[in-house]
Length: 137
Image (tube, rainbow, N blue to C red; front, side, top):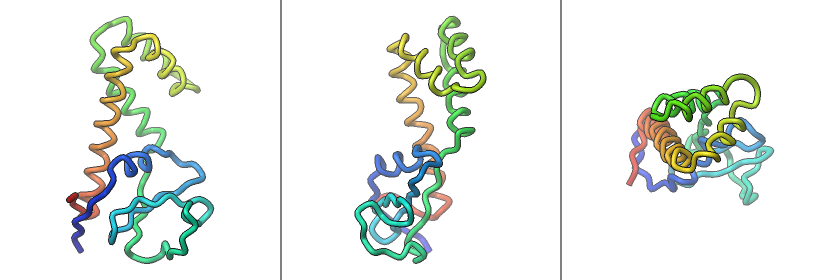
């Protein structure tokens, strides 16, 4: 079945980027609403049956996927010094925090990073929607 929905993409982006925490996310294929569920209950405490076919579990980007996005971004950095600092930052435990800390010293690259990451996540979202036979209004 094909779906044509109006979806708040910022909500869907939040769901994709949420990682594997306590919350789960669902897309209501009837309304286009993105629903956050904590401990099996929607946060607004509606009584909905998530087993219904209309509710589609939203995938999240894994740590490995987020790390790959950082690597792809680093490859686009033109300044050798900044690129080296970022490459060093993502080695070992704490890579995400160190990456952000390094970017705080380079405002233009930091700004570019947020745009790059948003585009990468949006690409993942659009691929997932296509896979699920969902088009946007």
